[in-house]
Image (tube, rainbow, N blue to C red):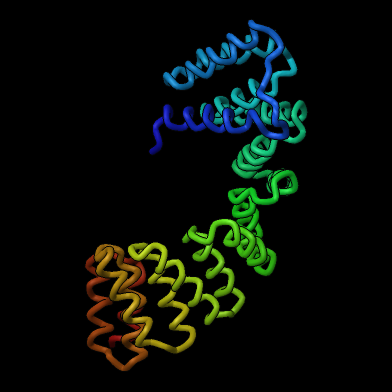
Length: 281
């Protein structure tokens, strides 16, 4: 679990990055009191004292009710404490005061997703992307949402955009490959999983997902080879054994396949017994 201090540090750093959004001018605060309270709040965040930080940001807002940065920091702190209602109110106030605040819309969207408000979450993501066309994480989040909703064509288009910005991000290929798989484009899925493996050779799911795509293409030898690599990476993840056992049996290698099911059974895989009964009797 990420320590609270690390999460709070992210809030401060992201706020600092956000200070220049929409303007080339250095940030200005209305009064010295506002300035003191705001930066004192940041110091408390860095020292893992969220309650004291909240007090300072509230004093900052009392001194200057238009301080969107303080509302943003408060929103993050309330979110970390599980006070989602106050967090959402603060994020909303932050973007009301600073309509071009891209990161504010992104974090507001993340919170809305957390509380189940998918409609507003997607709307805020789109707003963030409109403001910053190359906002990689927002584009990736939108793609993931489209995929979760079954809008695979839209998701693939978003993943294409994300990959054009960050061609080295292996998970984008993994998620795009999963969309292609669900649309029945198994060869396209193999290509994406191959790129995922190229970028992250020890990522077990790249091999497992490519194996399943190979299986749909009836290339069982390639599927078995990928699953053998996956098993070497993590011998305790029994689902790789289940898949390999299935493909061994499809290759008429019953002894090898049933041997995999027996090992998976010892590892307490819940599917192992049913597959043993189906293939090995």
